[in-house]
Image 1 (tube, rainbow, N blue to C red):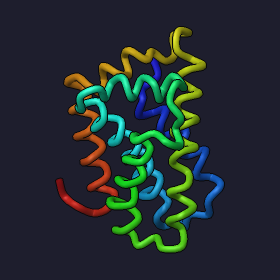
Image 2 (cartoon, rainbow, N blue to C red):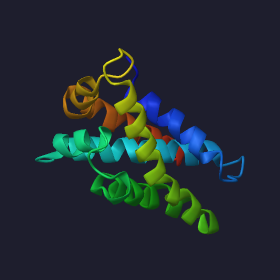
Image 3 (tube, helix red, strand yellow):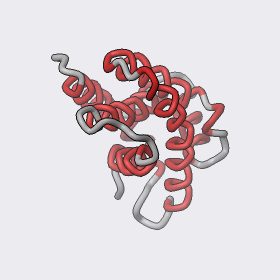
Image 4 (cartoon, helix red, strand yellow):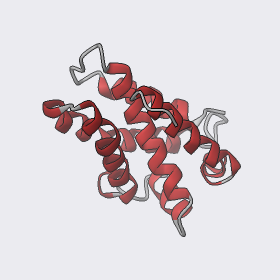
Length: 151
């Protein structure tokens, strides 16, 4: 089964190729984008009705561009990466990638669910259950490491 974190990282890498990110901060930016998206999914999963919101987003029933999950990912990225790395003129281009990344994630999951590669129920369980806390902790730890902060 494909791991949600791996899927996000693949999509972020492909999407961010369109933006000229300086080599010295590229890993931090890509990691920050991935972790912000994973963090928004994980935080949403812990809220009342959150799993339904995620399921609607990942199955294409909710529009990625107007989803509160996408908005949360943008806020996390802005607060934890853009401001800390002082990305200035790159900020709009990078933030604009997030709705497209969420939409692509939805497409990949919707297209592959049921063929053995992606199991939406496994993804939802990993975001909500004990693994969810692990994913959020891992995302927080990785993001802190990328930005030079200790957890």
